[in-house]
Length: 212
Image 1 (cartoon, rainbow, N blue to C red):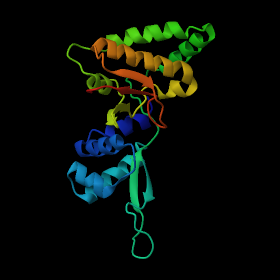
Image 2: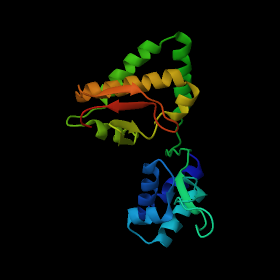
Image 3: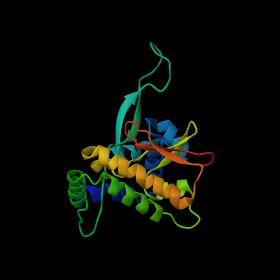
């Protein structure tokens, strides 16, 4: 655990700041100050203060963008906009390192050609993540996938395995798909299906179902 990670996470203890962060992070696009203020229900000046604090901590990143289709004289200056920063923060007391053994194990699986066994294990693990009465959205939110519905599919805004997926994409994405299939099996969602459906900046899996 680094001091920067702890400081960034501590910023989210303020309820208004956490609400602002959660709203921006959940949109998957750039958000202006007026929109954030309206969504959270506080004044624009207060939202601007919290947004800029989140940028300073590295939790959000900012830029400038025209929020209307107007251009030319009288169209006004581009507005300051915000979106979730691509980094990640982990806090553990005392400090723990789970990434290194995960990288080692992923490399061993690839060297041994044990991808199929890894997928079987992932399906079993996925089924074990389901508690009685859970629905698909609940399980995915609990595991950090940040699900949202779009065009009849349930998409996942966050990849909980991003670091490993960048280093071992074929292995980790196939294991992730198997894990999601295991979640479906544990829930008993017979009408739902999971498939590899990568989208830049999001998880590589999406779901199709009659009811989410």
